[in-house]
Figure 1: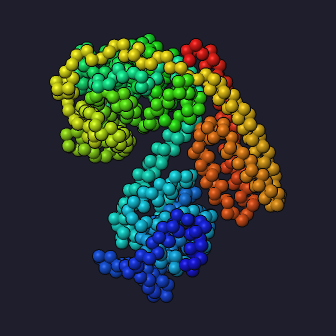
Figure 2 (figure 1 turned 60 degrees about the vertical axis):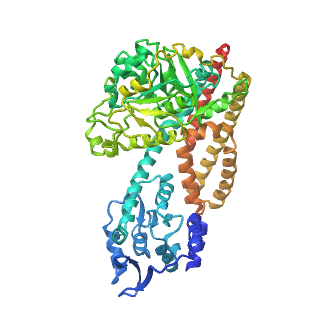
Figure 3 (figure 1 turned 90 degrees about the vertical axis):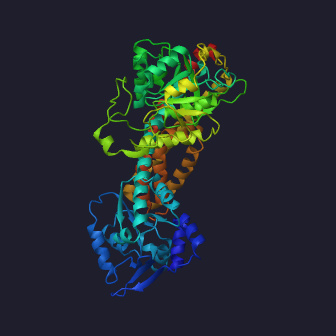
Length: 622
């Protein structure tokens, strides 16, 4: 039995096999196997509370039947069984739900070893119906297991917890559920963000390249105008409402550079305060809304410092001056832009919060000290945002109140925050660790404590740290390096190369269309020999697809989540003995992916041509 199961682990679940192989000599003195009244085997485990049975000592099969019958509303969900024991309930489930896929999670490694000794895993259709096996050896395994499990699973998940585990492994079960909720939340955030911005990122890249080439690079190392100068990052948290008089005083006396992030620029302008610059790099189409008033009123005194990933609508017709910075993993900038002097283009990491991004930029430009204003990362009374932003509802909703979590504030008290705020705060704290000697002060009254910062009220900071007037250079924008030259020959050569690659990709896509059409024909006639031949043709064409540069740099990143799901399907059907079923899944999943890619190919070819035309028109600025 165990030799057969080891073969299953090696071939289908190699990560579990490695863990099992490394742990096979572990002591098993806490786990024993006994016979029930019906002569079926049951597992007993010795805990501090005494001897506990995973299954019924009288009739474990009957108990398993009742448990599976109690499961309702599975529908088309993928079932995750927490707690396996000897798998009697899995046997019942496989019989009652022959079409439903499932995965198993065993939090006790010694119990898993007994499972391998007494249950034939082949009966659960490994790889086909039983998608994943997860086992814990230490507490860190829980999060890693669930991250791997949820990463590419497309179906909804139904969790079925074996009742005995809730009793015997109460702490482990509680930790599992809390971790699962957090991982699902993170996965949804990641998928939503990925789907939303994957296409926009490429589109923005093509549209923004001409602006990148015709505006100064804010990160240029040639200018040290800001070294040792104090700077304030103004965010739109509710504590900003308390600081307008202080900020007005700082501005009028030139005590520090004032940079706004996100919607805070509108809150400041509503109070007659013009920041020295405003940071933005959100790639969504909604980002332009932040600058609607600035554009409609023709406000040209606020320089925009934009990231290469910014929504292109934002920088179109911006009335003020603009400087740029390149964002890491921006494939378009990395592909087309090259400085003629050979100097590298300094890039900023990609952050969820624009405040963290601005902090990273200002730290690299050696501003000191840096003061955070309105950076609450928490709620305050019934407010979520500062007032003065006409397109945001600043009041807390009932749902936000109900979902709020406790965090420690700047004075050591508890305050309420959201999961998103907590994640953003942790991101900022992580970024700060890269600058251990930096002097960063947080003056956000009632805000969450940010590790790596010192809390002081803005009044105290003005008295003790901002004691020199007129430190702000009003011509700071002119001190940037304005005459950066980009290699136009490199740009033109790359455009030509990508145009040719796009044409080759069009041919590959047309060939895939033919293959899928043939597959569908042979599916209906159940001609398995022809399908097998087509699989070989498909594999060769897929190899060509994965070598095509335009696909790898442009098209696939625009659809990366869908692509990963398609690869998941390929992995799933790789072991399928039924060519017809295999072909059907391939044509369904890859066919949908192909159609989306063809649409994106047409769009991006047009964007490539437009970018080329605009850059050549502005070549005197390059």
